[in-house]
Length: 81
Image (cartoon, rainbow, N blue to C red; front, side, top):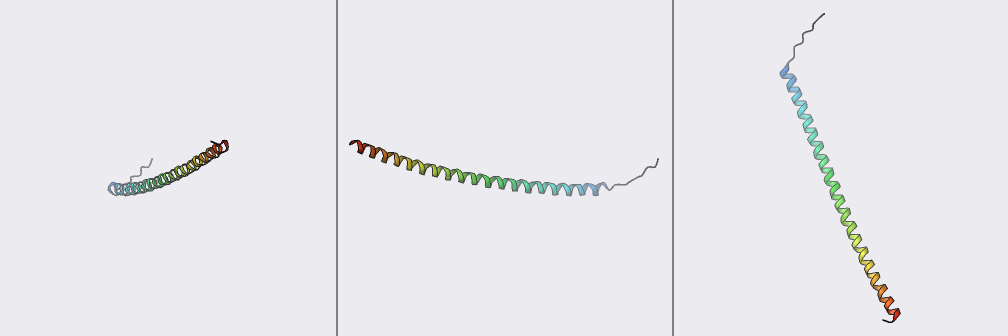
């Protein structure tokens, strides 16, 4: 059985791994920031849509109340009240 003796430069290997780890950490942080930015955009868009829906609802409710008032006035006028 033949044994192959390999010498490793552990300092060099360790440094390469540290560099690779630093790159992966930086990439992870970049992706996390991008994810957080996307979430913030989605949140803002959702808030805008909610505000728009609330505004439309308030407008429609106002129109319905005016129509109800006019209907009541016309009904009372027809009854001679």
